[in-house]
Amino acid sequence: MIGEFWVSASTTLGLVFLAELGDKTQLVCMTLAARHPAPPVLLGAVLAFMVLNLLAVLFGAAAAAWLPAWLVAGVVAALFALFGLQALRAAGAEDADAVEERSGRSVLLSTFGLIFLAELGDKTQLAVAGLAGTQPALPVWVGGTLALALASALGVLAGQTLLRRLPMSLLHRFSGIFFLLLAVLAGWKAVAALTAAA
Image: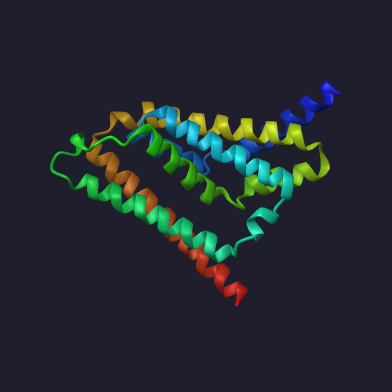
């Protein structure tokens, strides 16, 4: 029984971890961790993935179907655009190094919301839902959540070590452009979903 649990959990962990490497949420974690303290970014990401995987295990892909795909993609596009514009505005400030640090709770909630909306119906959530249809739910949830937490931790570590060495104004420009590109992609997805629904 315990052996079967770990086989299912480790299979899910391996598949989901590989699927998440280089994914947009890992890059979001990296960018946020370069600008904010690591613990609330990582905790917000892990909490979002715990909830998303729970939804995937309990309801399969139906959680994403509760809201129209174009609406979810549109909200994600607006959120990414807001983050991008804020970052570019901060890059244009005279003293970018003096940008006020947001509270840990604010960073945690922002990270949670951003990742929750961005990952709703994403390939990793669908993979967890599919695995839960063929394997016991608990080990699939544990394996999927651990995989996404590890991928997020790698993103946070990269953001804290690599990106922190860049000048703050350059970092703000980089993250601003990155979020605006994600906003364009999400907006395109919203338009495509709306067109398909019509």
